[in-house]
Figure: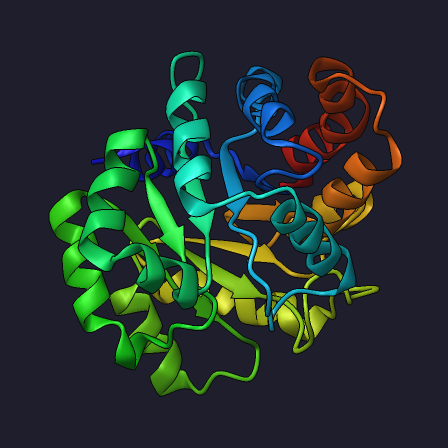
Length: 266
C-alpha cells in the first residue's frame, strides 16, 4: 500500500473526503513548486497533483496551457521536476501524483521514468492521453516500480468502458466532470454528480472529481457525491496573479477555503 492507497483508506475510515490540488511544475518557478508541497500538506491537502508542462496539452484549458508554456520557457524538464519532488520529500510525506502526457514520459524512457519517479518519491501518475485499452504495457512497468496509474473516466463513457477503467485504474479514479478542457466548467450538473454517485457504488477505488471545480462552493457541493475533489485551474491562476505571496501565505489565502469547504461538504 503506497501513500495514495493509504491516504484514501484512512479517509474512508474517518468518513472524510479528499482535497486534491493541482499545480504546474515550475510555474512560477521550481523553487515555489518545492515550497508549496510541504505547505499544502500542513494545510491538510490530501493529495498533491503536479503537472508536467508539455507543449501540446490537449486536455488543458487556457490557464494551464499558459502555465505550461511559462514553465517550458524557463527550461523546466521532467528530470528537474523529479529532482524537485525528491528535495520536497525531505519535508513532506503527502501523496504526490504527476499528471503528464505520454510524450514527455516516452522521451524520458518509460522504465527509466518509472524507476526515477518512484525513487524521487512520486506515488502515482495520471496520463490524460492514455486510454485504458492501450495502457497495459505502461501499467505493468509502473506496477513493478510501485507507481499507481490513474485513469480518467468521462460523463460520456459507456458502462462497459467505465467498468474497464474501474478495473484498470490504481490509486483512485479521476472523474472528468465536463466534456471540455480543464477550467472550462461553470457549474457541474446534477446529472453528472449522479453519475459519480453511481460509479462509486461499483468502484473499489476512490472516485475523485476534477476539470470543473474552482470555488469553495463548488468543492463543497461535489464533496457530497465524490470521494475527493480536484482543484487546478483556479489555483494556477491565483499563483499567476499573486507573484509576491510566499508559499505559506498563498496556501492560507487560496487553499484553506477549499479545504474547509471539502470538509463541510459531506
